[in-house]
Amino acid sequence: MAKIAIAVHGGAGPDSEFIQQNQEAYKQGIQQAVDAGYAVLEKGGTAVEAVEAAVNILENNPLFNAGRGSAINALGDIEMCASIMNGKTAESGAVAIVREIKNPVTLAKHVMIDSQHIYLGDSGALMFAEGAGTPKEPTAYFVTDHAYEQYEQKKQELEEQGERFNNSMHGTVGAVALDKDGNIAAATSTGGTECNAPGRIGDSSMIGVGTYADNETCAVSATGDGEFNIRYVAAFHVAALVEYKGLPLKDAANYLIHTKAKGSGGDMGLIAINKEGDIAMAFNSERMHRGWKSNSEEGSVEIY
Image (cartoon, rainbow, N blue to C red; front, top):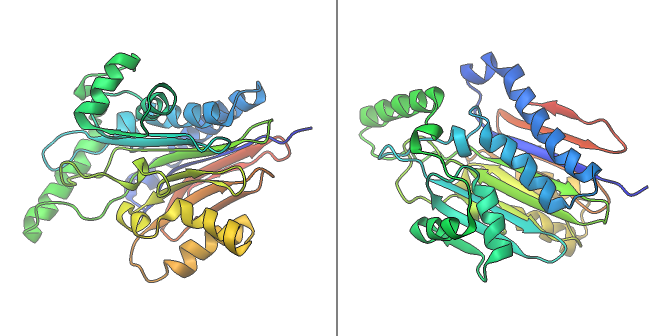
């Protein structure tokens, strides 16, 4: 029997009273994403379809910083980023600084499948979305009470510090999957962070940084401080350790997070999967919302 498996994350970073008070709701959200992606795989769907389905669930959940729960930037705007990659073909799609798009990862998939490009941003991505028929929502849909409270709190902190923009970048969701045909895929989506600089592009939309997939190595979705993931080319870094150093998947993930990036000062985390169905989850932060499931193991959902 061919192995199928999926892993999902809902972001890595510092703990908070809000997270502690809403642990069960966060766990339910991760479980729903795992179940949605796994259902696709169980019905014979592709890894690409599975990671899209899983990430869509988290983009629609106001608790997570992607899609509906996106952070509010320093100008009071919502700007989202996402990417997706097919490990069988190396095809990929990405979008950055998009507004009003209900599910940015689905738009990224349209870029991958329906365009000659890989990466579209801002007005160009929105123009493409119109042609692709990607569902949109008004700005008010994305502004949750929790996101607004975080924005107001961070804005006050920055004013007291004499700063204009938030330089600590957390908040991502992502998924990796293995389908019945032995193909893997990865997808990542983010709503940025409260009070970040307008036009800031995070790691989540960057192929090789926030997202990477290659059937011969692994599929990776990274999270945490985006600027640190960019510096370490996080997702591809793990794949390179597997390919060039011959490290087992879990050792490669742990080496990047706990050895290579040790002392960087940034929160980093990732989930990864290979065509054998091995799953790795590594993070150096106080928490990383995560869950997984395969047809050989029931899996679990954890925060800490």
